[in-house]
Image (cartoon, rainbow, N blue to C red; front, top):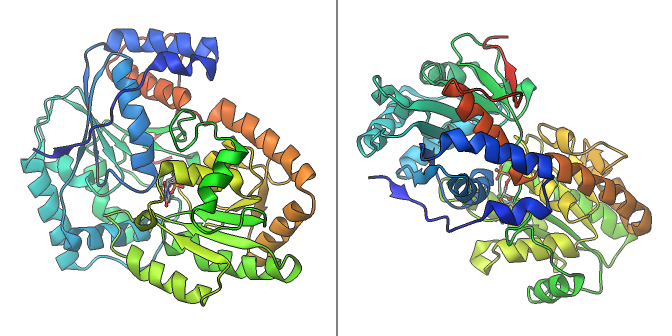
Length: 426
Ligand code: UDP
């Protein structure tokens, strides 16, 4: 059997203080006819990156809503994850395609994982491309299969996209973060649109006082009396940590005291991570005010929380970004947030209103300078950003969207509760 992730326990009732009563009632009403339905989430890793982050909350809350929910991790060696990373990059627009041998490796691991999986569920939720082809081995499945895409598919490498389309076409539904991500292709199932969400009560996002945050950040050698800029991201070229270093160097000319933290964990399904980590370290060229930290330095959820809370500005200078949970995490902490004007980031930040959207390292530097010069004004934007997150990007809304879809796929009446759909091939 595929390895199961223990997500512990969470109670929906705890979220009543954060979500509106209307939303909590809707969740209860939608969950009622689904009591006891069996759900499994399949993904490539239980650690590092957005999918893991979401599932650690979504799985126990679905469970608390009355469904029987599991989360299982597919198996793979490096040769498989090298192929899936190529697929991931290609679906985000990288021209490099798959060789015949890589395609075979991918199919071999889909079969291998399918053999270790029994589809005795009402709903099988497959996250991202890594396990997308397992469905091919269950032609007579009674389960409803749902594919959840977490990356930006607006300009995919067509060859690689065509490689996964036959599998995608077998699903009962596909979910994308944004309308723009639904590829223009025939053969897709019905497509649904909703963004992910963060858990405001998880250690990563729970309220942390400024003093506690400073106390934690201090332990990593940061001078808490001096300004700090932070980016929290996997070491990945799409997250552009080198561009962040460029921006920091410009800021440093005017604020010689400024420090930079690049906090990034290493996901086990990301073999490129170490190479790019090393490139980032050498780009920093031994600057003692640049702190490059990862889970190897014991940076876990609470530490990420502390870095975000303590930073004068939080940066997410991505050049491609499916959604960018880190942006929502930062806004939720009322941090002035500077982020690339790409992908799902633009659904979270309104430039000039709730944060800063930037197209280059220079613009990123200018935004940070503006924030450091006038922190009171920057805080006003951040406060508006927090309110936007409260209404759109917290877990109860995400749970509700899933429950609406489950009801729909079972032909149950959702009594006016809807989620956005896009006709396939539109
Ligand atoms: N994250 C973390 N530690 C790190 C780097 C990232 O906990 O060192 C978390 C981050 O806080 C966020 C998630 O991993 O919750 C990354 O999600 P996002 O959507 O920003 O990017 P992805 O990694 O999925 O591309």
